[in-house]
Length: 300
Ligand code: HEC
Image (cartoon, rainbow, N blue to C red):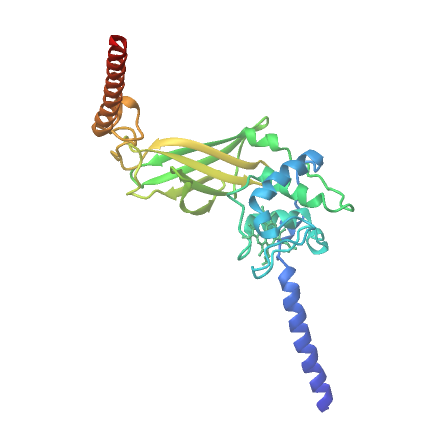
């Protein structure tokens, strides 16, 4: 009796350990995402383009596939992506991992376009001789049918985004689609609220911050990003005059060292002119002295 309980206990402890080690490699990818395939054909050209993207974005942590030179100081250690474990993942799972990330593994959702993500996966697959691609029938050209319009309601201070596709059969609203709204800044983009899901009319509404500064006229560039199952990745920008106008002096408005000659600071102009004048004076002095020496030589 005693030994039986003990055995059950051991079994329980071992299975908890096993489950944990499985959880390490288990990304819990939803079934529909797991079955997703690339619409880009994986060939030598796509792998070569993917390699460049990989070297720029992934190699610092994952090292070069098959070389065992990933960054060992990280925990968990970034896996070698040519390994059996990674290659056992579906293309959909790899794509999902790139989109969501996990702890140290960053999300590339807003860093790489879907096309670039598939190219990186093409590169990863080039290390697997047994890999056979299942190509998606998705047509990336369908994105061109989509029209994003944005409007602003000053009463409610809301931006309404409307997403429609002009199919041959008529206009289709993109409903139940997750969309993100950004404002373009000098460096990168500022997201407005969280992502929203479009309603049955293909519309979503965002609250626009009251105190957001725009340019001199209060104009901001709004960028909508979405990834629709049928139409793919869409990014659309619109300029609207809805922000707070700001009178910010431009970098080249005032006299400054980095400006053009006409707008250089006075002290630089004076210093420079003085330098040139001094140089000419020294030259003149030299010529005169040489002349004197020549004359005194000629007298003898
Ligand atoms: C900052 C370091 C870092 C960068 C940059 C990075 N990764 Fe990762 N990656 C990790 C870590 C750490 C893990 C393990 C995460 C875990 O298991 O929770 C990981 C896991 C993965 C996995 C899952 C592998 C498996 O077998 O479970 C894939 C696939 C992956 N990364 C691909 C990429 C790609 C492609 C890029 C570049 C576009 C990239 N990673 C950039 C650190 C990084």
